[in-house]
Image (cartoon, rainbow, N blue to C red; front, side, top):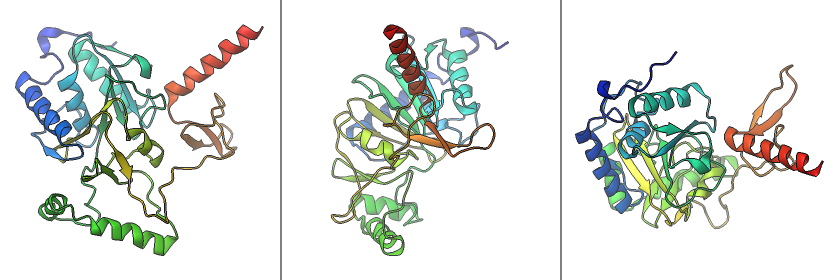
Length: 291
């Protein structure tokens, strides 16, 4: 049996108040300059770096005693990473957690933005392994900062062009670079291209935390977020034409390709498990109402 919340054993939400204040100040700076990477003093946590420490530090710094938290990993509420982070927050803060996207005040996620549209007032925290979008074209940190300062993104555009020449199309999948507020190129976490469009003019605040790289950046509400594209090679999301979820029947969600219990397939199912469950319940309610 898991130990219950023991307030005297921890400061509320694990981090000491000075650390939380510093992370909140850096978050405010990130909100004031959309897409700009703000350095912060990343703290040690009882999980390994690279397992969501940046997102977790943001979450622990902004949650209040009346907030409701949702944690997802790859769209799944029940993965090992999501469960471990949720239990840590529960045991060090005592706040309530949920799997319902609409009910949550703070949503910490890795690799997905929920299928349900987030409302104003909700905060989405994304865990980020590599916050520097120029790292693939410029290995030196100092030169990367200079390119951001001078808005010199020619190397990134050239990389996209070379992809078209070589493969006939822009083949980047997850972590597709975006232009934020017509100023900074940003790495939108390793979310699929499907989720990039959800950041544009979104009503909610999105915070990005990279614990290993010690960077925080943000997309405030109602901000322009445009994936990079050429006039003759437009940005496209993943296509699931002719496919639907095997559980709820949804055809307008991001789908995972899986094998059946006996090796049959490929089969498709919603990546967002909470949304899928909600759609299944709605389907059963409609069937019961029709009887």
